[in-house]
Length: 280
Image 1 (cartoon, rainbow, N blue to C red):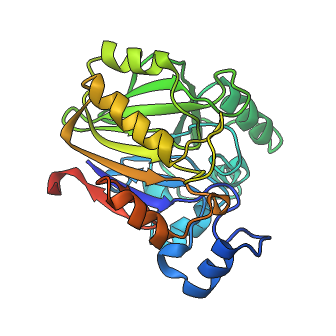
Image 2: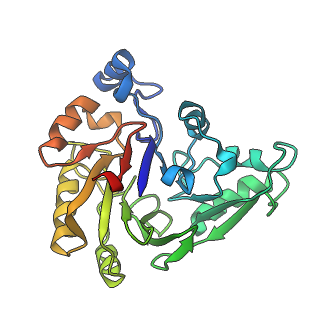
């Protein structure tokens, strides 16, 4: 399994569009890994795309992608830094030409509500170009060779409107916890029930070393989550852990965060990072 981090920031990005804090000023000066766009991910060079933020067009250009070749899109929740349906509209007739396959979009009911509102404002759905599939919490489903295990995340309205996922290709399994607080106990029970064994874990670390809160994790949460996964035998000693989804309000630069996480054997993500489990 190969995971590509197209973007690794929270909604306001780093540097934030309107901010003069130390982290943002440092990013403007240093560029490189200090620049973080809104979070978005590819599995196996486009077999599955995870989230479609306002920065999706930027990612397409920066990473030399062709979204016309991607047929499956998984959406975690309805916030604009994870779903920007106004750009999906441009897959409809009279905005695009030559498309011979639909884009299949998978998301929960809250995501569908936003999606429908935007698509209907442009004349309504057209299954030749876009097909929406509503998914339910704790009900696994199959997409393009992957088994996807969805579960509610502590985020949004805290009413099962935000999801995270375990995604298995039959050999390796990825766990995503992006843009959310510490997982509910039911999440661990569900993964145990499904006999999931994680190869790669991508950890929300929005708050970095700042205090804990309900809707995002920090580095302390990350260490607790790793311990819990190990205690429940949901991962192995070879499991790869990556800290991701950073806000400038967390207070640390990429270099500072990497120095912290490397002590625990955890990778700090950056835009363009590729993790290939076959190379571990």
